[in-house]
Image (cartoon, rainbow, N blue to C red; front, side):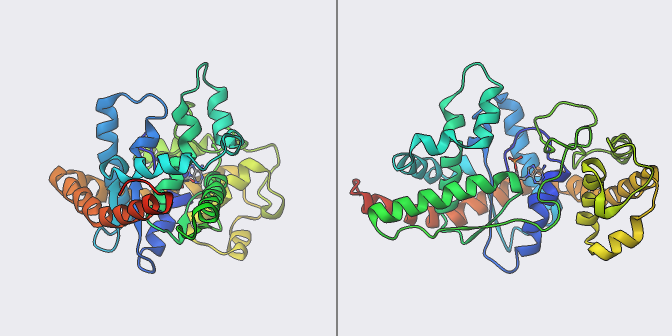
Length: 319
Ligand code: AMP
């Protein structure tokens, strides 16, 4: 995740929750991608603080630093090194087609090269560790496809080098939409007051944002035919509660929207309260976070180094 903006329930349901679920089945590496964050200007002191905040949020969500490695991208130089090598096998046309690039570039007068290169750096983050699966939200599926294309292109040019990774999307919550506008993805960079529920929002704020969520003019919930606003609320409830489709129908069909919103708000709050308590405990000892990040980087650096050495050898670079 990028250390920019405030992590929200979309980040949690789309990615973090899945990470915690799989961490005992796989050897996992969870990265805080600060080099990606600076593809748009970040105030340096804020970025420095955000990196630690994200690390604490990973831990508060239940990522276990003994089972998994948590590390910061710029702390392992091989990420930037491999990104360059991959840039050299990536056609510009592939990058210009990325929808996230097009959307971000459209908002800016002058587009930094980093924004175009963003998915190549992401490919480096993944291929560096020969990752088998990458658990992300739906918005990253296109970048994962590109990562697969880059890996395959490299392998066909220079011989089998990279594992071609698979994408893992959650079944519910892969794309949480904005509460103020259910046609737009919930986003850290959106500015609307009622757009997102941040993971560190106090309960009163969570309640207010959800109670103001945009719905439609139907009289009551009908799970099978719900419009985008109601569907988004139902998905948030289902993803937090792990309720089955049948349980969702039984619980919500015929319910008035106000009551649906109350149920969603209470479900979200009941998950965020213990999460926020753990966050406060973790941040009470800043030395602990630095230890976790240092240990994570030390654990993954040799894997990253050996991939870069392999790539250099394959490409004929100086070793
Ligand atoms: P980012 O906000 O780009 O740092 O994304 C961090 C992770 O959260 C990625 O795996 C995204 O796919 C996921 N994510 C971001 N926004 C959403 C959303 N609205 N719904 C579901 N997953 C999301």
